Amino acid sequence: MQISTNQFYNTSNSLMSQLTEQADKLQTQISTGKRLQDPSDDAVAYQQLQLLARQTSNDSAYQANVATAQSLLTQSDSTLTSVVSQIQRAQELAVEANSGSLDDDQRSAISTELRGIISSLVGLANTTNAHGTPLFAGSQGTQPVTQNADGSVTINDTGTATSIPIGESQTVVANDTASDVFGGIDTGSGTTDLFSILNSFADALDAGGTAASDAASTAGDALTAALSHVSDAQASVGAREKRLDLVSSAMTDMAVTRETQRSSLEDTDVTQAITDLQKTMTILQATQASFTKLTSLSLFDYLK
Image (cartoon, helix red, strand yellow):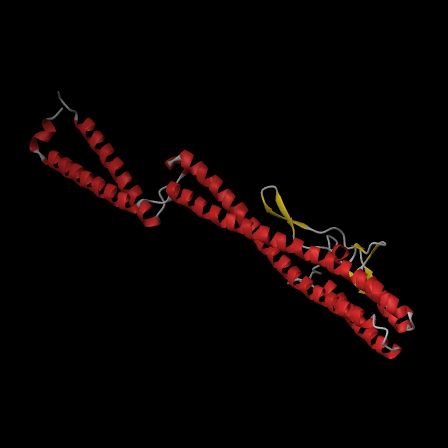
């Protein structure tokens, strides 16, 4: 069968072009470490990579939110520990003030310490986070409590506690409001707040007389209820911290799994790519040598 000169040239050029393109592609895969350079290289794998990239981006945002919530809850936990310590000291003072052997000067001294505790608790209630926002403020972000000129304390309406998204359809309450922590205390005879309990107790001690002992007993029971209330709030904070630890750990595991999937789809198997490149170059060199040899034959011009 006769082979035309044009057909020979076209076939040889086409083969060498394909081999050169394949060699260039393999060299790029080796140098970049990426098997896929364009969507056309593997449309299905490219779509899967886009999905993995979106999931990674979403989880990065969620992980940042988790870190923010963890920081807020850790600070809340520490602050509530200080609140509990103040309440426990107030309980000790209630026991001390309940003694019938105290005179009015001694009760007045206890009252002075109680008012110091109230001031400390006001400071704790108005604690700010790393961004300067009140820790126990709600959605409105206003100052949680205000100590008035007469020593009384007002718990302000700061809105509801804020929830932070930490995953697909998952949120966590990253802070508690002052009204949740310091108010809503059930004393058995009604609901009140910690500041009112302490101020009423201090006022009774300052008034002196036998009624001071009765006030100390009443305050002792109310402070027990307050301690239970704040301890429950702190336990809730601890539970949320543990939940966030689990969520963060799950995100870390998922990131590892996702990276493994990405690598299997996108990364170059360098050893295999080098082997394929060597094979391709060998075939290309042999093809080029054969083409050069055949085109140099004197009889080539007679092949039609």
